[in-house]
Image (cartoon, rainbow, N blue to C red; front, side, top):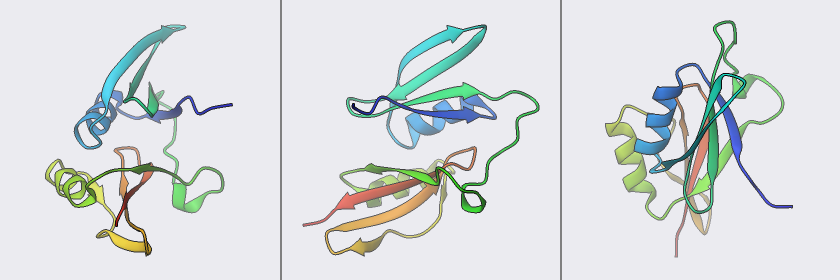
Length: 124
C-alpha cells in the first residue's frame, strides 16, 4: 500500500485551488468530471490533494471540535518563507514556527475551509 491522495470538500473550490497553489506551491495536476461533478487534483511529485466543490447544504467541519481526521502535515525546506508568503496572501497562520522537537520547527495554517495543515521544517 502507498499513499495516493487526500480529499477536501471545498465551499469555494476555486478559492481552495488558489490557496493550495499560491500558498503551498502546489500545481493543478489533473481535473476529472464524475457524475457531473468536477474534481481538481493539486500536487507535486510526492503529494496530491483532491478538491471537490461542496454542495449548497453541506456544513463546514471543525477539526478542533470533532473526532477523526484532525490535520495533515507537510515538510518544507524554508518554514519562515512559507509563513511569510502565506500571511502575504491572507492565509491564517495559527502560530509562529516553534521547536516542537529538537530537530524541527513547526506551525499550523488553515485552508479556506478550516482544514488544519501542519508545516514542518527540519533543522540541522
